[in-house]
Image (cartoon, rainbow, N blue to C red):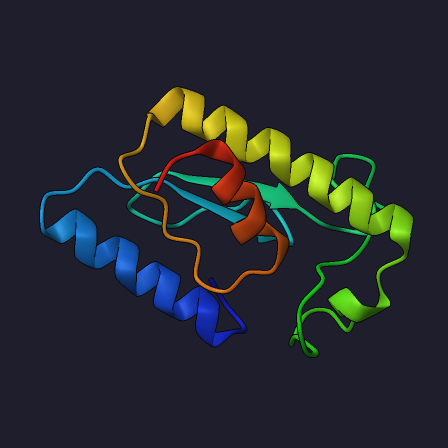
Length: 121
């Protein structure tokens, strides 16, 4: 939720929906698993050289990020495949557990395509 406008707006949207009485879950790609939010968050962790991370490379973004310089453009084909597979599994597990009525995905590259594949609006 830090370092990008997308993260800030996702956080604000989740807080607002919770305040309005909605049940909210958030799935984010992040640098670590720490959580300070008042709503449930599942993190897919990207951290090069960390054997506990979900993905063995730094957090990718569309442009440079305060905590990572890796862009989606610079991911190798293998890294893109890993990213897609890990996100596919995480999204499917969250849909199975939460059974959402709607999924909001903003403009987050492959995540939006993966969400469409779930059949959830």
